[in-house]
Length: 364
Ligand SMILES: [Ca+2]
Image (cartoon, rainbow, N blue to C red; front, side, top):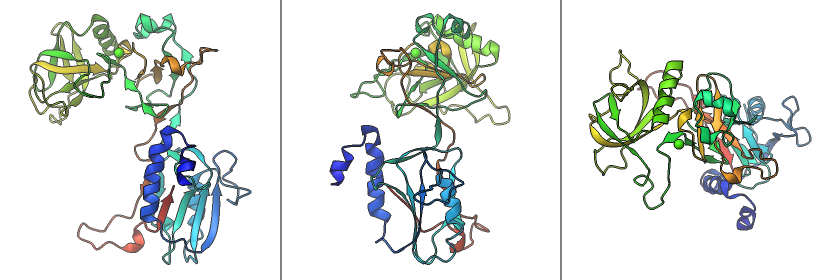
């Protein structure tokens, strides 16, 4: 029966379902009597509702708050049935000691339909408002061949994230050379550039870094919007050590010396200082500049202006309207769910169980 149900869920959810199923087996005790059940429905609910099946809450956090008003002396489990769907959090869902079960009973947060993976709690927000790029974007260093193919949308200025999810997969930060994937050699088959020299804080580039990419870096620097990085296989200069890679923010572009220098902190010279001294023939690529955005699957976020650019694959375009047709999620927090007990009085103090988080079950 379980297998049959799972076939109805999408491939993207399969991993979540598998993880949730294993969690369920590991942590769910024999179900005790139920003291009360609250209901959450992210579409039809309202946080001013009482949280009944006919009048559910909208958010999981409101259910958490209500649970904390009735869990002081529990007479059975408290269930929170969450309707299937995506729950985009506006802030980290945090459980403290006061959210714990008491008298040995559990607070059980579970998918309302009992199908593992049908409820997805997402620490990000949907990106909408896409528009096509035009020749006007050439002034922002969009490559001319990408005009019209790349879409863009305005996020709040100062928005800062380092990964983007498109249809549940991580998109590629715009880079040069372009990303290629070979399952036989997932790291070493990537296209790369080669350094011509360097030291512990910088590398020098050769003619394999194209003029358009260099110009894009220079322009970003002159605008005060340089947020690119170089990613370097720093273990050995030639071959080997594909597992050893560093991503270093570029603080200065010097075209006369053909040098990319990392962001340095005078008070903390260890920051961004590589473990090895760079020299010639190190493999690397650069990422994080609009001038690098020339391949489907790449994105670029200008962290100063908040403009986000994405180059969709052909399958991500509505053939009838030409509009972009993807689910894009940007991370908005580092932690989606957080179980936070009180700090101990000192490192050697014995933990106080009443100040720990306990008897909370996430089921499915
Ligand atoms: Ca590229």
